[in-house]
Amino acid sequence: MFDKVLIANRGEIAVRINRACHELGIKTVAVHSTIDAEAMHARLADESVCIGPPQARESYLNIPAIIAAAEITNADAIHPGYGFLAENERFASIVEEHGLAFIGPTPEHIGMMGDKIRAKETMKKAGVPVVPGSDGPVANEAEAAEVAAGIGFPVLLKAVAGGGGRGMKVVRSADQLGLAYSTARAEAQAAFGNGSMYVEKLLERPRHIEIQVLADQYGNAVHLGERDCSLQRRHQKILEEAPSPALNIEQRDAIGMRVVRAIRALGYRGVGTIEFLYEHGQFYFIEMNTRIQVEHPVTEMITGIDLVREQIRVAAGAPLAYKQEDIRFSGHAIECRVNAEHPRTFQPSPGEVSGYHPPGGLGVRVDSAVYQGYRVPPHYDSLLAKVIVHGQSRNECLMRMRRALGEFVISGVETTVPLHLRLLANPDFANGDYDVAWLERLLAAEA
Ligand code: ADP
Image 1: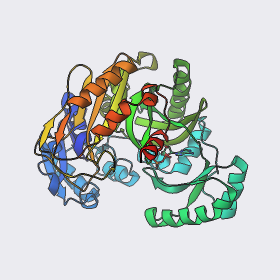
Image 2: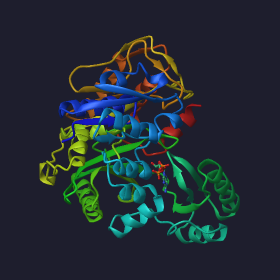
Image 3: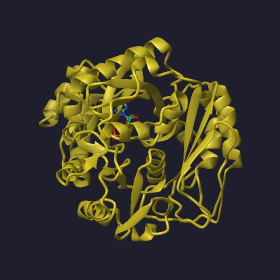
């Protein structure tokens, strides 16, 4: 096992990783920007190193500074968390070249899945169903039109280099394609430095269902069921739950085992998430995330398995502690992402948290790095806290989440707690009857 792990991240996920390390008896090193000198992740770690100014480019994305911090503190591994450098193939290689362990998959697997087109091809070959569309990027408008005619409108033009829900354009008919193609290309070129596009069938009302996997370097792999992340705004997840209200045991088993076979065939190690769109009983692969995800706690709550702990163990060369038949699902879990944003306009709301009292009680977990007097900096994402509840049934979770959010005191900044309370009171949501565009339709109808 590792003696000392450097955590190359900030906020709630850095605190989360620090917890797993300490429970494994591993010492921790935090890195922080100047504005994060007083941040909770830096205070809770055994050591902390300042790696640069507030701008992420010069601190949390600053590879030489992070490697230097690992060397001076004598860390033997680096955990990248999510975001920042977590899916950066070059970073993973540099970490390994410096004789440090990267707590994640091999750089090759990161590269393979980071390229959406290669990822889709690889999964298709491994027997995982994908969204119908072009085989790779389209060369020009004529080819886009040909593919679109073949799969039928509406289609989605997607930037090869897109991500985080950006770089997608809906095209409803052949006469819209020309203009959409040239604008999408120009936008992708400007935003990602790569104008290359591919074409996919637009699914009108799919759910977003993802499968959590865990694998070691000896070819053992298990799945830990699914998470339903259909509650989205601008393709960003807002609330997640497990199990999905849309799946039964047979469907879960079938897709889970198909994914496990693919993961074994790839020789993948670590934690990973295979994301699907799900419509009319069919799964369509969209992408694989080769890191721990924001919403991992809902899976932990229904399986009792500490995913970050397992991720660290397999990175240190330990064999998987579980076989598929050891994985048991118990009850239901829901996570609400509480952001420092206005609950109606979604304007970011940085500033000082003047009062803070998190909810508690049976079945309530809060993952956060906030404390009273903390100043939310404007430089990073706006996630303040994740409230996760576990209950025997979905209905118990809904009641518990309403109760927990009702108790949550965060003053001084605007938060999305009122949005979550509105969603929890909505009859469609209460029935589990929602898809990836449901929240957008609701917000548009209210506007
Ligand atoms: P990103 O890497 O930008 O997050 P994804 O491919 O994972 O992009 O897609 C993000 C979200 O965009 C999905 O959860 C879904 O809401 C929507 N989406 C992606 N592809 C399609 C599609 N073919 N049809 C309908 N919606 C889609």
